[in-house]
Length: 549
Image (cartoon, rainbow, N blue to C red; front, top):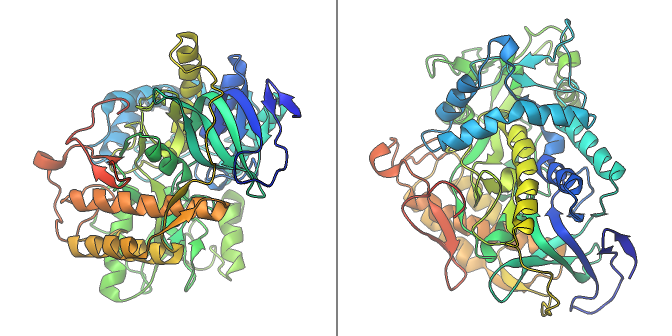
């Protein structure tokens, strides 16, 4: 077996369905977004042998597409951690954990300093300080950015370069199928499929999931094609709990083109932060009188307002008028290029926009350090629910969370390893790698979720969608990348529908048309979901305590 370094073996091509290759590491990181690569670099610096696994290329992740920036406080501007915390709590609709919010926000400046030390170059203002903009839900100009509207791409570039310099081995185009479990229930590694679908095993003292979200659960999304929720499904099957799955944030402004499906170009919130306004075809202001922050209201408020407006007018989209922004092409080159491809000039005409699935607010229930309720299993980034976001994400808190929790998760692994709390590498046979799972047609799942579990939901629609997906499921062997993804989407559709049906109120980005009011007496609490003995998602205890569940 060829050595990759730090005890990691390279896969050898075989043809059997049983695992035919093996690798080992102290820590295997699944995913290459900001949380995953930050954790990998931090783990390496702490002396751990680290292996990174990604089902695409190292630079393919949700992070790459993040346009807005990183929300981080600079006291010299008059901003404060307390104000950032207050903005996050207001956006989160009463479900954020205040101590978690305070901890992550306070950790932002140091995490950004370390990111800059790794080579990330942020845009600067005329006086040489970091340029800052304001986005929806923020009370201050605290969002730093790179390349105008290409912050995620710059962060991804710098972190990937760091992984290369540190000689951290990376298995590209490998997908995680299932966890390896010890007799005591600890996670001790993963079963993977290589690019050809050949199964193999990675044995590890700890597994860190940083696989992003599940935007592909919907027909139109800002997420790349790889955002199919594999890590969350993997965690559920390993016995971990998930929380806040019913809260799926729809970004108010993706570029509208008739009949568009899949990943739609994002029109960053920073465009509104610099003066653009939402209007209809007649020039009427969409957000007038809706919220004190107007066009800079939190995302759930703006998305719901656009949805109501289009429904009342019988149209598919509204417009974002950015004609008053000087130098639009220079400030927002990514948005300008996307508009140009569909024949729109933002300097001369409003941009057609509509909401689309953007970020999951919930995920694997973890502590602020990424620990789950399953020993040996950790999670960070969009796949995790730390308590930061609550019922709705505040703009540009996502990259912040990935940086801070990615570092803390690697530190948690090192601490747990030193304390003897992680299982030793086991030589137990993992069994047949051709794990099977129920799979429904992806197109059917996406249509049903978009129709019945998007911005507006009701009991009849949620129940009907669940029934139709159940009837369409067929047990399939997970012997291909596509099968693993489709199984994950099927499981997450079931889990989201269960949680959304349980929460009989409207809060944040969970909007029930049959329960239109927020109910703090009964529902100011998070819902946990775990798989029952039959493998079906079920809502558990009535409250989620702080930390892992």
